[in-house]
Amino acid sequence: MAKDPRLGAYMIGVVSMRYGVHPQTLRLYEREGLLTPSRTEGKTRLYSDDDLERLEFILNLTRDLGVNLAGVEVVLTLRDRLNRMQEDLERLAQALEAAGVKDVPRPVSGTGLVKLASHGLRKRS
Image (cartoon, rainbow, N blue to C red; front, side, top):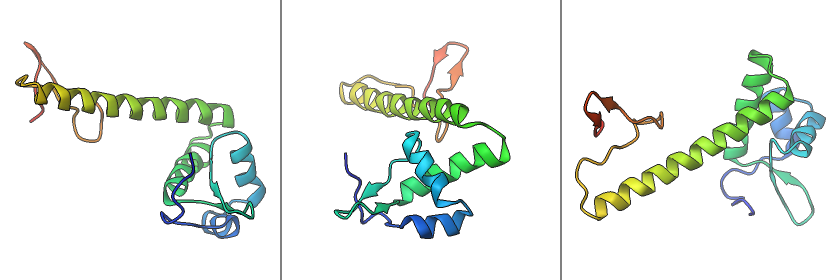
C-alpha cells in the first residue's frame, strides 16, 4: 500500500544528513524490510514522517542499545503486532460498548495494558 506523500516527503539525502546516517545504510534498512519509503514515479525514495519515526526507533536500538539488525527486525515485528492487537482490542471494546455491555475494560493510555482489580478486569481510571 502506497503511503500518502503529503505526510512529509523527505529525500534520502535530507534524511541521511538529518540523522547522520549514510544513504547506503538507509538503502540497507529498506532491503532488510525495516523501512519502506514510498517512491515517486521516477523511483526516488520519499520518507514520510512515519518513516522518520520508525528510523529514529531503529537508530535508538542500534546506536544506543547495540541491537543488531536481526534483533531490530524482531523488535519491530513484535511492536507492529502489539500495535495491531491494541487496535483490535480497541475495536472490540467499542463493539461491546455499542452492544450495551457495561464496564468494558479499556487499554491504559499509551501502554496497551488493561488494569486488573482483585475481582477481575475493570475500566481504567
